[in-house]
Image (cartoon, rainbow, N blue to C red; front, side, top):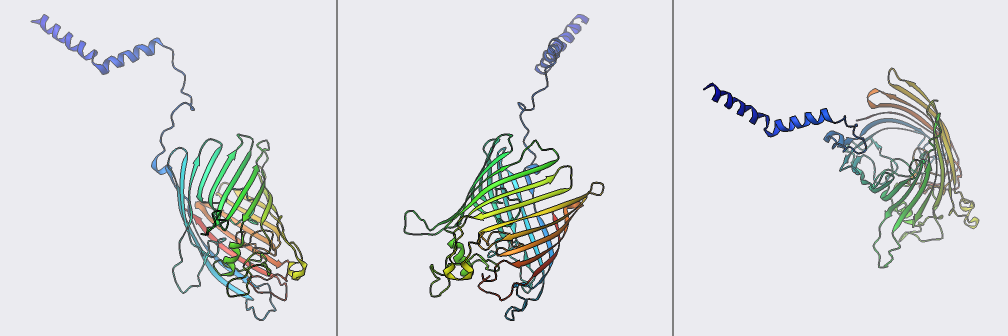
Length: 431
């Protein structure tokens, strides 16, 4: 009897040991004792875990409130037809959007914003509409494909992909729509960008459909990695507007706000139907742009500068003093100094600068509205305070005078080149 019990117990132990899980455990233990420890897996070869849902979706939104005072908005204090000596307004801006990673190489984004469709260079809305609700527009809608480590394809409406150190040529609120290709030359610091953006589509009987209007933008930027004390980026770009007269017609028809859009109109060209109002721009727009941005990695100083030349600006003295010069040059910059308190997580930046923007140097619909578009000498001064929690407090003031009083703005000429002052207080927060 005892012999049979011992045999049954031995059989049960043997089956337990030779069960699949136990057998694998024994084999693994034996291999670990016999073989040397394996090297750590290479981080390149290791498969990256799928990002968590909250990591794949990122919200990037902000809300801002602004109080603004303007003295002599029309640049003509003694012009009795312009009663604009003093103006006070309250404004707000809301932008809500985010990005979603569709995979390892594809990102889709959407952003909604307040603002007026007729004013592409600003997302701010004024509290002057008898409590009516502000419109929310689609500001950005895009898909970006990272084809390789150095090649990115961008499709849709998104921020200008070219290097823009200031907003003298291109306002950050303007989102070009179309295609863009971004090519990085390895670790050299060189970035080549090409953009094909549609301004207006027209249906015509011509097979070539040459009435369509495009913006072809190409740029080269360089950020040397050898500089340790500062971060320097320099860039050269070219903006070619095909058939920009569609923009001119939109201004003259009131589809786009013509306030301070001083690009000259051609009195010899086409006119709007049933009127004597010129329908086309006087100059073409092929703009060369050179710029730089210098930020101190170990010093608080910063410098951003831009220069632009419209190589297709025209002149015709027979048309009068407003057309006697080409007026196709612009230049300006901002010098800044930053105070940082890392303990309290606060940062204060003070900047001042100067911008000279001739009437046909840039396309006024798309450049910075704070600089007062074109035909202006502008001196901006601003202070920005960054607080914990993404809160920003800002004060800025612009001192501005016209370059050429002979060139009208919004169809209104003035007898005097008076000083305009605009001062604002802004509080904003990101979430």
